[in-house]
Length: 396
Figure (tube, rainbow, N blue to C red):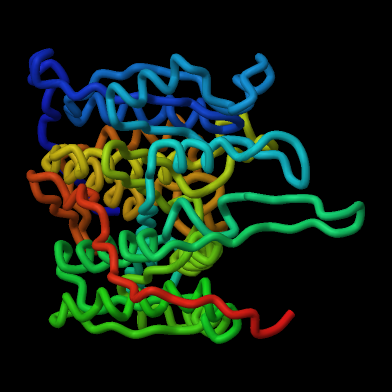
């Protein structure tokens, strides 16, 4: 195992109170509190100039009688800071309270969900060289959860898709590709069957693509697109897709890359942003010090880039890469018979802190810009001009 010489960590006090960025933090449910406890010391040791305002959302809020899962005082903090770092939230299956993730995304207008899915092979089993970013529309589609009961035996879920929502997410995907030197954007939908909703998405993406002539554009149907991501992920660069498809596709891509527990995500809107791991709350392993904090830690790296703290983000990302290279692995990615050392949640975070200032030896080193990443667009999508139309009944 290669030795390393960490550079001195920048002291958190190096940034005075006037230069520190306030953020909201929500521990979440299940393993959320312990992976947040592992993440915050890494941020502090790396010198992240942040001031934390902790809020309670999710199961504890519901059980206390807050039907939305987000107390009024939590909304106040998130709106004031404009940034939320959140642990996973428990959402009951088949019944019970509504997803607090959906509530936060829709209330704050976090229309773009950005999920990088990167391989760290051979240190974590995955497709070597895979580097795919899924840009998911975050407010519309079936995932909005607008459901009705038509009868005792028939229920309905509304699939609402707007041209403005399609244009927003398409431009975000192309802006992301342009800012990060990506060469291709693939839109994915089921427009051969759902010709109005998914057809609107596909047509809008194709129209937006014309404004980015330097970026290759293609469109695929979601079923074959998902199959190809599973077997030929290196054929993709940036994927832009609808809400429900994006949730499924990004989980598939993250698992193909190595593990869903390593995948971060950013939820970006015009006035706020939320950062969270894409995995669930895993209540079955909560409190056992076995959860992998990487998804939340790498989400915090995305947050630092978003806030313009690229230097700190680079330190943390490279220390994390070196930790993975050095074989310090949590149970979910540990392989018996290999030289990797199996550690718990907190010990993994401590290993990352020890390597702050070190760089990976084989995996590509990170280098994030000091300026903030391209933010969400502040202007509304341009409204098309429609000719007056006559409505005719053509069938039942």
